[in-house]
Figure 1 (cartoon, rainbow, N blue to C red):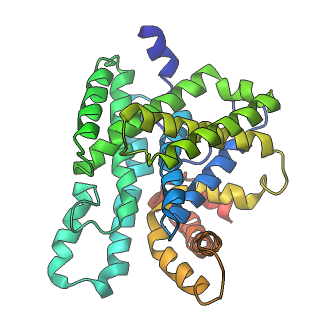
Figure 2: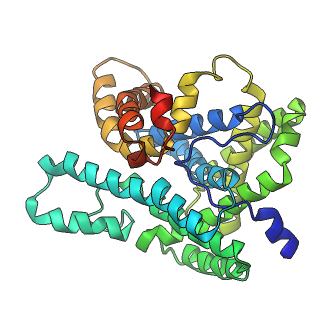
Length: 347
């Protein structure tokens, strides 16, 4: 266990954080940009009308992917640095987003429910009737995961079997959407730890040097996810806990392997992909608003096929958020969990 702990002790990370510097001399991990941009597109797309099988396919892995990336991009930190980073990269942006979404929704809210709505921020789960926006559950869940992982770094690895046991019990008893989304956090912890382990072992770097292996892994991952989707599996509920975890891992492997094979493409290695990658937290928090406008606009046209219509709406939904993300990165990067240097980069 000590060897494993040393291998995983690479510190706290967050989906909000800018893409980490590569260990290689390239300075950036292009595959991370591609995976993050593709992953947030799939999340936006998954919140639009899609066929049931497509929804099961997406919900097998697209959220676990971000837990994995948070673990992969994590960094070592002492207690004070950890608290500061967690507060600035996740907690503060969560409350800012919650407050802004409450203001946006004021015109549709009864003033009598405003207090329960604001209280919902401290419940951190969309099962609470006043929770302002369902996608925000991910942020409290990731905070829980970060806190647990920090405890693990302090040689409290005995907590993981306990967390796993609680997660198994909650899963098999259908206990979902709990306070601070702790049920989903405990599931997500598995993917976070897998990401930290992948980083410490350098497995992705080794896979990148063998394109054929990456291509085969992408195909295998796709086959597993499709098979599990046909069986009705999604990451947070399904027939079996380990099958759920397997589906998430297969989807993560599929996405990473695909990104490794296309990372040199000029079409994907550009500023647009990088910008979306760096603003996944902002898009996650606010696409619930832009989705409605995007879908309403696309629906005005006679577009055949639900997938095409929702795909176009997802792209438009993200595009609508770009100018707002730019404004925040220019004038208030702290509000969206961006690094202070984001202001200079936006100039």
